[in-house]
Structures are given as C-alpha cells and as structure tokens.
Amino acid sequence: MSRVLAFAAAAAIAVAGLAPTAADAQMKVGLIPSSTGPISVVGIPQKNTAALLPQKIGDISVEYTVLDDASDPTQTAQAVKKLLTDNVDAIIGPSGSPNAMGIIGFIAEAGTPLLAPVGTAAAVLPMDDKKKWVFKTTQNDDIIAKALVDHMTKTGVKTVGIIAVNDPFGENWVKTFTAIAEKAGIKISSTERYQRVDTSVMAQTLKLVGQNPDAVLVAAAGGSTILPHTTLVDQGYKGKIYQTHGAAAPAFLKLGGKKVEGAILAASLMLVIDEIPDSNPSKKVATAYIDAYKKLYGEIPATFGANVYDAGLLLQAAVPEAAKAGKPGTKEFRAGLRDALEKTKELVGTQGVYNMTADDHSGFDERGRVMITVKDGKWKLLQ
Image (cartoon, rainbow, N blue to C red; front, side):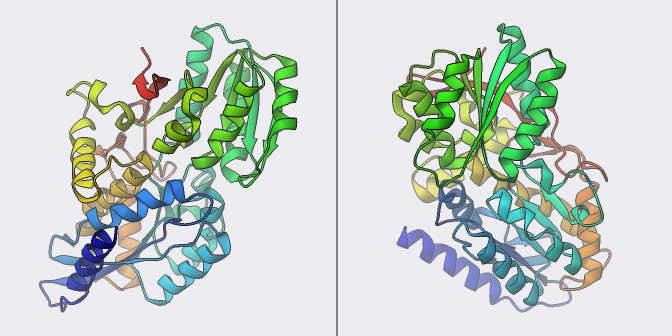
C-alpha cells in the first residue's frame, strides 16, 4: 500500500508541477472518499481509483486533491469548503449519502459541479436550483427497485418486510420501493429501521420474522448491509432476502459467508463480468477498469470504485466543451462544465450508459443493472 500511495503522490506532484501555458491549461479536481470510518468499505476503492483518473484531457492537465472525510458529514463539509477555497473546478465524492446531502448547498452557492458516487437518488431528485449542480454516478433507486419488484412478481412474492438504515439512502429506498411494490400488488408487512453503527438488530428482525413475509428487503449500503441479513438467517427466516446495489462489495461475501447464500440483488454487471456477453456496451470499459485496478493493487475493485472511475469518464467527455466557455479556474468554465455534463449522451461507463437531461442527472436506464445472486460464496448472474 505504501508503494501505491507513493506512486499516486508522485503522479499528483508531477501533474501539479506542470506550468499551465496557452496550449496547456490546468484544472483542479477534488476527490472526497470515506477511506476510513464506518463506510470505508465504500470509500477505500474510491480513493484507490484516484490513480486511474485522467491526468490530461485534451490540452488541459488535471490536478487531483484527495481528502478523506473519515465517513463523517462534518468533515465532508470541511473538506468541501477547503476545496472550494482552493478554487477547484469539480469535486468527485463523497462516499456516503448523508455526507452528500449535507454539502449540496455549498456546491450550488459556489457554482461547482459535484460528481457524487452515492446511492441515494435524493441527491439529484427532485431537481431544483441547488441539485442542478450535482451529477450522480450510480443508478437511481427506482431502476434497481423496479428490477427487484419484477423478480418478486415473477417468483410469487406477495408480502415484503423492509429493514432500512436510518439515513437518506435508506429513507429514499423505503419511499421508492414501497411505491413500486404496492403498485405491483405487493403488500409491505412492516418497515423497520436501524443505525449504520448498530451492533444488533435483534428487535427489528424478530418483528419481521414474526410476520413471516414472503421476502425481506435490506435497504442499506456498504458494511451495514450484512448485519440484518445474517441476523435474519440466525433467527431461522426461510423467505427470500433481497439487497440493493449497496451490498455490491467483496466484504458482503467475505463477512456474510454462508449466511448470505441465496441473496438477491440488482446491481452492476461488474460483479459478474465473466458471464456478461461481449455485446454489452459496458463490458469492455468495465474490463479495462478492473484490469488496471488489479494491476496497480493486486485485487479486483468493488463496484463503488467504478463510480469514481465513471466520474473521470464523464469529465473526459465534458471538459473539452466546458473549455469553450472559459478557462479552468473561472466561473465560466465551471458553468460550462455543468452544462456539458447535463448534455451527456450515450456515454458508455463501467456500469451502464449515461444519458443526462435537465431532469435526470443520473442518466442510467435498464442497461445499468443486472439481476444477481450469491451462490457458493460468489456472485452469479441470476437467470
């Protein structure tokens, strides 16, 4: 890891040392991963991906500043203020949904685009004058929820219990999933909540098991996805257990072990890349990212890192257009960057294809997810 950090630091110094000229301007980008703290499972691959982001876009060199917020929304706000003071042209991050929701006002006031690799759709919906500066590099909840409900309907699920983490990610999932499920004729037996840092969810899961729904949905992200799932299994629950794309991390398999066998989720094709046909437009991009990450770190990245990699792809496409509006470091450039991001069309990323509009700053469609299960301790495409 020290070798990797040294490499990344050297790269950053090398980029920072380039003196901007008329033909070689420089833009600054901040990256705020939660590489320590409760959501480090999400933040570590995002921090690591910084070394794979584009260091030059056209004639513009890119300098990255990486600040760990320790999973703390207060530290996220402090990091954002520092980066804005340093006159960055864009920010990638943070890792957590609560962290992102707390900084939207600062981003909008500064007129600086934020590429948010977070789960909650509340970061971009409903669209308003503040959220128009935010672009989300993960699938919106409704795309994932629709896939889960479709599977439930096909497999005869009539009742579902929900256990959701008590934060913006969980709350938006409760709202979105409940509406889609009830429209499909599925009854919600009850909705239970817990905190990310809780060490027990015994009371909540006992209530769910007592109601004996056909299925239970765990609405959480990162490490907090595991405890409700394993507790349900320990209590003898025999129904289907669904997860959101927030569970799409190696830690879910490693820490959950045999107790997460049979888990069902809709998530990125990266989890089952070997089973994805070559005709899928994202397979080539995702494979390139996986190979580059593995070469640098000796392991396969979690899909959370891919959300940051896709932010780099979005910038690569948008920066040349933004440069027509002004030079990096100016409000004209940042406004041009926002406008260019909003006009993104058919950009192939690691997890799907982006088509942004004034009302949709996520841009994914059904190409942005596949149905997956856990079998023999591995992710498998669910046929």
